[in-house]
Length: 413
Image 1 (cartoon, helix red, strand yellow):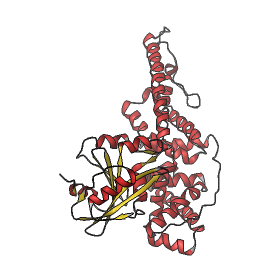
Image 2 (cartoon, rainbow, N blue to C red):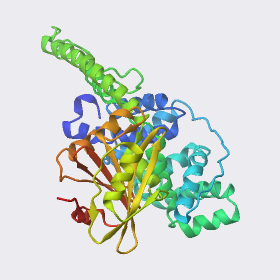
Image 3 (tube, rainbow, N blue to C red):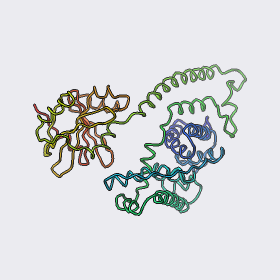
Image 4 (cartoon, one colour):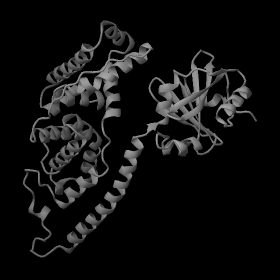
């Protein structure tokens, strides 16, 4: 397809795959900057190369072009690393932490094709027929090569595991643990798409700037003259407006991207609370809300209101260090079925004071702006329920039904 033949719906379908293409590009290159350049080359090819009739699937089409663009600029370098060896205490969490620590190094040591296969199948959920179309092979061959990639990364993880750790993985995790580990790795290790990439691609398409492409270009796509040889004033004005708009948008996005990178250097408060929840123990055991409130005031000079949870017992309070110098009360409950409910009591003052290290996303704050409104987060095994009571921001972590929990929280009149 050429720029002049791309319809709005086709362009939207291709642009909708930008995040997937960038994620794949990162496992084919050595750094994020190189991945951006590879994505830009891929999209220039997409808008300048006629698509084959079989390539009606935008994700398949773009992935094939991504591989072609990468191959035309040489093969990525291979690295190897020795995975660390650390263990924690609990079976499930130990096994998860074990594979999460080893997966990145094992993944990086794989050949480029196997990294791409695993990204397509395990992170982006392409099945064998679609992978086969990307590779230009049949379904059976694609599945075979995918299974070889899975075996390679499994063997790499097991190579650094003792017999006990090997057994821990097999007994503590589901059979598709590689999929979950790779998805978590992608979430934590892959860089977010720079917001300037899309404007750059769209502008290069509009301006016909395809310097790296080998496909012939239509004379009309690069010329500001009409067919009779006169200058097309409308086209010149459109191009001027596009350039001006790009400068303004790039400036705004540049500022936003700087803010984004600053935010990403901080710890997400909800995720951090969930990771620490199982380790919290009561520093003051009591069933009395009043005694717990007095304990917090004595320790932190802070007044809180301890809620009750219907059909759950209150077991006490702890003062938890969330980050260096950042302490907050944590309320401990036990549900009727024995499930622990851990409630962190933050505040707006806490967020202001430690905002350089800890962050609660703006959409969460908007959701709980009014008292009585809750924000629910599914973190996998754990669930987080967030709400506000006056200046307090409470985050409840549970492995039970968080949706049902919100109906059971009661404050004194």
